[in-house]
Length: 478
Picture: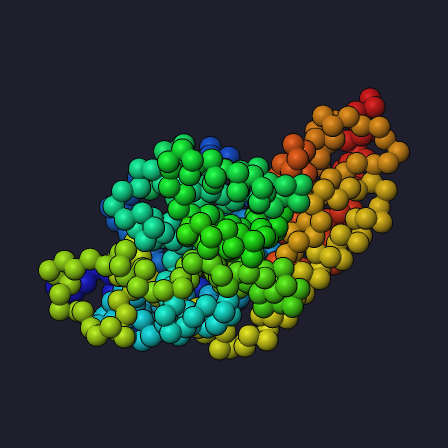
């Protein structure tokens, strides 16, 4: 019986060309589109909600429906005026690489299924190990779906290496600026609340060393087992980098696992300024990096690097009978032995093809440009009588709020004003600019990791913010 899913060669070519044209049009015209879309559940239900059809529809008709309804109802995270959360400034080569990996449906779990996929993951991981001055011979890693899975993989490994089978008395330490994915990972691993110490940061939003030392000493006196510190190399809120060298010293002295969550900021190692800020990152036992952030890759590709690859295989390797025929020699890595997933997509291909196509120099230039752009934005804001810097430009993130010198506004009024400015900017769909909370204040946050973002994009957005602020203040007078 013929497969019901077959198309003719001509049909596949025509369909494929249409999709490529749609993607190319997106890359070349995205700046002319609005970065924000808004829709209610009711509106989405009215478009999409239906029963699964018994009979099919023409492929072109389904594609047209998706083009007209799905794509326009998704924010453009790669838009130059998408400033919120951590934008996703992808690149065309990597997008096409993902199409190849998916089109050929390459399984990237075991060597025997695709030695090329495994080899490219080894090669690209070695590139990253060298970037962060991790040992290539002993070190290793794995590509994951994102930073959340990389952090979970790291903490599972740390728990096994440091605690063995019994972690009932183990304690883990992180700051109140650590990414929420770490809390999720800790929860998944079954740690109780009293085993997790979330410590307040200092005035610069960095790990408070004195508080950490006090907490470790207290826990040891109570007979507990400190086993891991999670540091941040670029917090999501402020881009702040914890004092990595000092934390590494504490971990060495206390025999603790040192995990650095560099999902956001680790890529800044490719710039001179970022490299200085990240001093000490090479001392981590494990390091999370997110290529789908500041390495300009499409979602999903996160990464975990470790100093000793045997830590991963010793934690995750299982030998069920049905896999016995695909075990190679030790140099032929089966990446399902290095992490949680057995079935894995070929994530390394897009990273490999983009680095080979553009060269590291292009990535260094883009990251340096982003950091400089945030510094210039800070200069503009500091010259204004209306804007106040709450957290200065750090690894391309800056936090500020509208606080005019000629107005005597209360903290509550300032919080309301800045929240409303953000709401109106997003409602205008001209820019994606949202708030966060720092020092109990509502502040506006800009993340500037898109190499297509220009100073004019930022100036235009700040002008829109100014206009909305004045409009709101006039409304309050009435």
